[in-house]
Image (cartoon, rainbow, N blue to C red; front, top):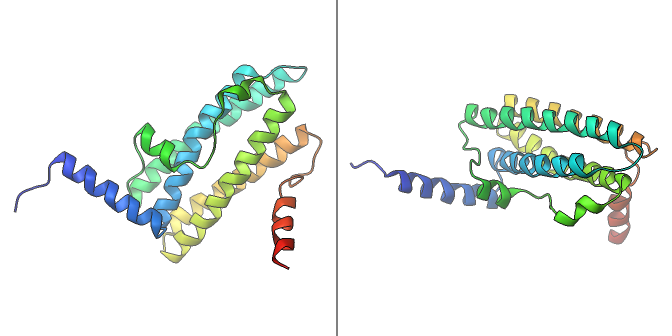
Length: 187
Protein backbone atom coordinates (compact mmCIF):
# COMPACT_ATOMS: atom_id res chain seq x y z
CA UNK A 1 0.00 0.00 0.00
CA UNK A 2 1.43 3.38 -0.99
CA UNK A 3 1.74 6.20 1.50
CA UNK A 4 -0.29 9.36 1.05
CA UNK A 5 1.43 12.42 -0.33
CA UNK A 6 1.66 15.52 1.82
CA UNK A 7 -1.05 17.11 -0.31
CA UNK A 8 -3.29 14.04 0.15
CA UNK A 9 -2.75 14.11 3.92
CA UNK A 10 -3.70 17.78 4.06
CA UNK A 11 -6.75 17.22 1.84
CA UNK A 12 -7.88 14.42 4.18
CA UNK A 13 -7.37 16.73 7.18
CA UNK A 14 -9.50 19.45 5.57
CA UNK A 15 -12.22 16.94 4.69
CA UNK A 16 -12.31 15.61 8.27
CA UNK A 17 -12.33 19.16 9.64
CA UNK A 18 -15.35 20.00 7.50
CA UNK A 19 -17.16 16.90 8.78
CA UNK A 20 -16.24 17.72 12.40
CA UNK A 21 -17.58 21.27 12.05
CA UNK A 22 -20.92 20.09 10.67
CA UNK A 23 -21.39 17.54 13.45
CA UNK A 24 -19.49 19.43 16.14
CA UNK A 25 -16.80 17.69 18.13
CA UNK A 26 -14.87 19.09 21.06
CA UNK A 27 -11.84 19.46 18.79
CA UNK A 28 -13.76 21.34 16.11
CA UNK A 29 -15.43 23.65 18.63
CA UNK A 30 -12.06 24.26 20.30
CA UNK A 31 -10.60 25.16 16.91
CA UNK A 32 -13.20 27.96 16.76
CA UNK A 33 -11.82 29.18 20.08
CA UNK A 34 -8.25 29.01 18.75
CA UNK A 35 -9.38 31.02 15.71
CA UNK A 36 -11.16 33.57 17.89
CA UNK A 37 -7.95 33.98 19.89
CA UNK A 38 -6.02 34.79 16.72
CA UNK A 39 -8.51 37.45 15.61
CA UNK A 40 -8.73 38.76 19.17
CA UNK A 41 -4.95 39.27 19.14
CA UNK A 42 -5.24 41.51 16.10
CA UNK A 43 -8.22 43.42 17.52
CA UNK A 44 -6.53 43.95 20.90
CA UNK A 45 -3.41 45.21 19.12
CA UNK A 46 -5.52 47.63 17.11
CA UNK A 47 -7.18 48.88 20.31
CA UNK A 48 -3.81 49.33 22.05
CA UNK A 49 -2.26 51.17 19.12
CA UNK A 50 -5.10 53.60 18.55
CA UNK A 51 -6.72 54.25 21.95
CA UNK A 52 -6.92 57.95 22.76
CA UNK A 53 -8.13 60.03 25.64
CA UNK A 54 -7.54 60.56 29.33
CA UNK A 55 -7.32 56.85 30.09
CA UNK A 56 -5.10 55.92 27.13
CA UNK A 57 -2.03 55.16 29.24
CA UNK A 58 -3.85 52.81 31.59
CA UNK A 59 -5.80 51.23 28.73
CA UNK A 60 -2.63 50.59 26.73
CA UNK A 61 -1.22 48.77 29.75
CA UNK A 62 -4.43 46.74 30.11
CA UNK A 63 -4.55 45.91 26.41
CA UNK A 64 -0.91 44.77 26.57
CA UNK A 65 -1.80 42.50 29.51
CA UNK A 66 -4.66 41.06 27.48
CA UNK A 67 -2.42 40.60 24.42
CA UNK A 68 0.21 38.76 26.49
CA UNK A 69 -2.48 36.53 28.01
CA UNK A 70 -3.96 35.91 24.56
CA UNK A 71 -0.61 34.82 23.10
CA UNK A 72 -0.05 32.40 26.00
CA UNK A 73 -3.57 30.97 25.71
CA UNK A 74 -3.26 30.54 21.94
CA UNK A 75 -0.02 28.56 22.34
CA UNK A 76 -1.40 26.46 25.21
CA UNK A 77 -4.59 25.65 23.36
CA UNK A 78 -2.74 24.63 20.19
CA UNK A 79 -0.56 22.29 22.24
CA UNK A 80 -3.58 20.93 24.09
CA UNK A 81 -5.34 20.13 20.83
CA UNK A 82 -2.25 18.20 19.73
CA UNK A 83 -2.20 16.41 23.11
CA UNK A 84 -5.81 15.39 22.39
CA UNK A 85 -4.77 14.01 18.97
CA UNK A 86 -6.56 16.86 17.22
CA UNK A 87 -5.28 19.07 14.42
CA UNK A 88 -5.29 22.75 15.40
CA UNK A 89 -5.75 25.14 12.52
CA UNK A 90 -2.30 26.21 11.44
CA UNK A 91 -2.75 28.71 8.62
CA UNK A 92 -4.12 32.23 8.64
CA UNK A 93 -6.78 31.18 6.12
CA UNK A 94 -8.01 28.34 8.36
CA UNK A 95 -7.97 30.51 11.47
CA UNK A 96 -9.85 33.30 9.71
CA UNK A 97 -12.41 30.83 8.33
CA UNK A 98 -13.30 29.47 11.77
CA UNK A 99 -13.25 32.71 13.78
CA UNK A 100 -16.57 34.18 14.78
CA UNK A 101 -15.13 37.57 15.75
CA UNK A 102 -15.34 40.40 13.24
CA UNK A 103 -12.67 42.93 12.37
CA UNK A 104 -13.08 46.45 11.05
CA UNK A 105 -10.21 48.73 10.08
CA UNK A 106 -12.32 51.82 10.75
CA UNK A 107 -12.72 50.74 14.37
CA UNK A 108 -9.41 52.43 15.21
CA UNK A 109 -11.24 55.77 15.11
CA UNK A 110 -13.71 54.84 17.88
CA UNK A 111 -13.54 56.43 21.32
CA UNK A 112 -12.00 54.51 24.24
CA UNK A 113 -15.33 53.51 25.83
CA UNK A 114 -16.64 52.06 22.56
CA UNK A 115 -13.41 50.13 22.11
CA UNK A 116 -13.58 48.71 25.63
CA UNK A 117 -17.25 47.74 25.13
CA UNK A 118 -16.33 45.91 21.91
CA UNK A 119 -13.59 43.95 23.66
CA UNK A 120 -16.08 42.97 26.37
CA UNK A 121 -18.53 41.78 23.71
CA UNK A 122 -15.79 39.72 22.05
CA UNK A 123 -14.97 37.95 25.32
CA UNK A 124 -18.68 37.26 25.79
CA UNK A 125 -18.95 35.89 22.23
CA UNK A 126 -15.91 33.66 22.83
CA UNK A 127 -17.64 32.27 25.92
CA UNK A 128 -20.50 30.93 23.77
CA UNK A 129 -18.01 28.65 22.01
CA UNK A 130 -16.20 27.82 25.24
CA UNK A 131 -19.44 26.65 26.87
CA UNK A 132 -20.25 24.42 23.87
CA UNK A 133 -16.70 23.05 23.78
CA UNK A 134 -16.76 22.24 27.51
CA UNK A 135 -19.98 20.23 27.09
CA UNK A 136 -18.57 18.39 24.08
CA UNK A 137 -15.26 17.68 25.87
CA UNK A 138 -17.16 16.27 28.85
CA UNK A 139 -19.37 14.17 26.57
CA UNK A 140 -16.30 12.85 24.71
CA UNK A 141 -14.52 12.16 28.01
CA UNK A 142 -11.69 14.60 27.43
CA UNK A 143 -11.11 15.82 31.00
CA UNK A 144 -7.89 17.74 30.31
CA UNK A 145 -9.55 19.68 27.51
CA UNK A 146 -12.65 20.35 29.62
CA UNK A 147 -10.47 21.55 32.52
CA UNK A 148 -8.45 23.95 30.34
CA UNK A 149 -11.60 25.31 28.74
CA UNK A 150 -13.22 25.81 32.14
CA UNK A 151 -10.18 27.77 33.32
CA UNK A 152 -10.24 29.81 30.11
CA UNK A 153 -13.93 30.60 30.71
CA UNK A 154 -13.00 31.88 34.16
CA UNK A 155 -10.24 34.04 32.67
CA UNK A 156 -12.68 35.53 30.16
CA UNK A 157 -15.18 36.22 32.94
CA UNK A 158 -12.48 38.07 34.91
CA UNK A 159 -11.50 40.10 31.86
CA UNK A 160 -15.14 41.02 31.25
CA UNK A 161 -15.61 42.13 34.88
CA UNK A 162 -12.43 44.22 34.90
CA UNK A 163 -13.22 45.92 31.60
CA UNK A 164 -16.82 46.52 32.64
CA UNK A 165 -15.48 48.26 35.78
CA UNK A 166 -13.62 50.70 33.51
CA UNK A 167 -17.02 51.60 32.02
CA UNK A 168 -18.57 51.88 35.49
CA UNK A 169 -20.64 48.73 35.00
CA UNK A 170 -21.25 45.47 36.81
CA UNK A 171 -19.82 42.35 35.16
CA UNK A 172 -22.88 41.43 33.06
CA UNK A 173 -24.25 44.90 32.28
CA UNK A 174 -25.46 45.00 28.67
CA UNK A 175 -24.61 41.37 27.97
CA UNK A 176 -27.57 39.40 29.31
CA UNK A 177 -30.34 41.73 28.15
CA UNK A 178 -30.13 40.35 24.60
CA UNK A 179 -30.66 36.82 25.92
CA UNK A 180 -33.67 37.97 27.93
CA UNK A 181 -35.16 39.64 24.82
CA UNK A 182 -34.76 36.39 22.89
CA UNK A 183 -36.61 34.50 25.63
CA UNK A 184 -39.50 36.99 25.50
CA UNK A 185 -39.91 36.31 21.77
CA UNK A 186 -40.58 32.64 22.50
CA UNK A 187 -43.68 33.41 24.61
